[in-house]
Length: 219
Image (cartoon, rainbow, N blue to C red; front, side, top):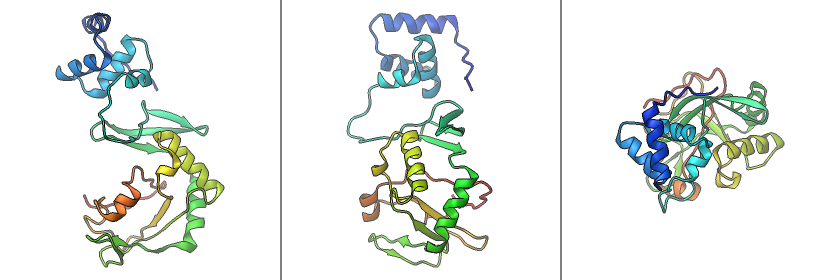
């Protein structure tokens, strides 16, 4: 679905004259944000005025040094992956956050549940020393698939990698968590921590909830 942009003649003329005078897209973007435009809106306006894709605008923006590989984020309200539409139901730039509806089909969810069920074990927490242990405050069950373990797992991993712009081997194996109405994870137990486990495996970049999942975590 295309976004409607209301670009005034004055703004259009300013962007064109500023870039023709030798100022970079990065300069124009910074000046627009200083004058009240948000980052996403500014990028779309610049792309429309200069008649270039969003990706081309992004490629001209100076990236901060020393931050390592970063995920990309779907633009627009719908993207197509593996021949299926994925709806972007929430889009936030700071912090970078997208909520994607339709990443997995109902059939894929059912298949994952069936494959995971015999391997579910009591979920563990990570203490301050980095050790994993059972805790009464977290009573869910979970399991991990190995990367590329099965054709279905490999297909889902490649879909996520393509969508986020991060190689499959930069992520952890797919995890399935099982929560019943009486099962819980207390506040703070699902928060990423800078422990040895995080340093070894990195922070989690994406999570998926199956259709009909109504489990909640306190903030």
